[in-house]
Image (tube, rainbow, N blue to C red; front, top):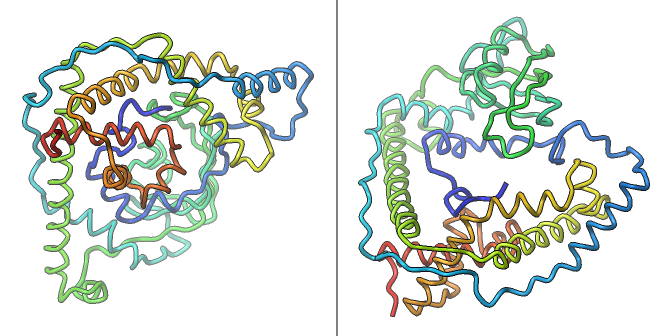
Length: 376
């Protein structure tokens, strides 16, 4: 699913995200299936109709005319330099927040395996395979029981079960899951490989091993880092809020030709990326057909998803033109950093040249709207 704007790629810097990123939880999971929907047999022999449809899809995409229209639409800019928005604040950091930060950041290094005769308790780290027909699966995934990684129904089902057991739980995929599986219910099979319990609290011994004089110093440092993250969150939300208010205060109308061009450009970039990374196993056309999609469906759904993005592009280019600003290499580096990529090349490799160039325009425009970059 496409992002509706830059914020969706970067993600809101909420406490849960901070904690998960601190302990590297996302780095632990390895998707078993990479198809849009689960349960597809990659060895299934395709019939003549399907083979013809695959060839037709690949030919149509290869023949796309990606010439940019002379105009993307019309716009009457808002008074974007004088936009007023509500003040954004964040709750005061509590001792519970600090304790949770410490748990995810430092205590995973001091886990103790729970004895085989003991079952899972809330707060334990559980390592296992989690597989469902609707969503696919994750191998050797580490989750914290009670933290809602898959939701309360899975957490509750895990409690009491022991290492080596396999359980089956009826599981409904969250509605915000970014595939057609969202909202679907199927059995999730969980193979429990290990159960580890955390220390009850940080000790002076642990603090010293982590480079601090004592536990108090570690806790104070953790609170300071949380405050820095919260301050950054407030700043980014404020910048983005003003940017969106400036867009919504403008009168923008895209053309059908621009919408068609933008959608096809993104589809072509996705197809090229897929064909490169699939090692010749499937073409993009076969990927769509095996997953039950037609190219027309992809084109129409993409157009629906990118209407707001196209409006943003029209706004961004109008502001850049009015302020006589041409993004430079420093802006490109700043955009990659803002999107949490290591460098520009990594960003382009991940999201493609076309989208990255548009993100650069968006980032620079956000800075202009917030008076953090001067035009001429």
